[in-house]
Length: 277
Ligand SMILES: [Zn+2]
Image (tube, rainbow, N blue to C red; front, side):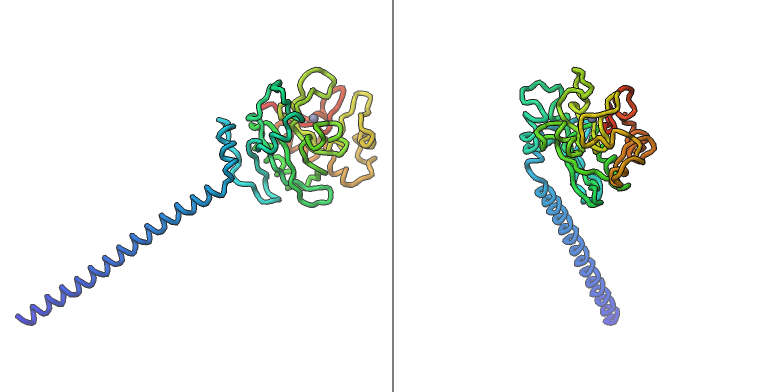
């Protein structure tokens, strides 16, 4: 009897130890789970704080129903990023490339501010800035990411406002740019596609606007009025040339369906790509 009792007591002790151990294990698991949950919340709260408050406010004010900005600015050398036009840039462009009198047919909400990595004429990486129609922003980033990949050289990429909104001054410096609320360069009274953020001029000195008599208005581009690059002296200019058969033409026109000004009859605008939708 004693022996039996001892055995059952022993069983009870073992069962007690096992149950206790299981309880401790379960408790440990619960605590671990709780800690993980807490850590996750903390991490997401930190991420939230890392976003500049002003950006959230601007997004709220200018939110577009169709698309949202790419989340984080990428590393230089990757794809660029876009955001609603920041307040500092609104101040910079209003009264320069964007009318201050309320006459613009496009609102600032319909435009996007892009920062874009590009290869300069020395092969180095620079970050440029550009304003385009918001619905084209992601496609423009894709295009310039491809241009970066193939090493297409771009001399500079600044807002035309850095030139007081002067298209002429921007072209004189071979500046690549897009948005400018101005009339069309064909001398007509129609609004340029640049005024809608739907046109980009690339290396405009090397890829000039040439009228029907074969000349342009920038003397520093005279060598490039001829599109026979065999006659050009500068090797970088040859790589920046835009024409059928070039990679940049393939990317804009064949891959992304943009229209090229170099294929127009009468005058030719070799620097110019535009897209309507
Ligand atoms: Zn143009």
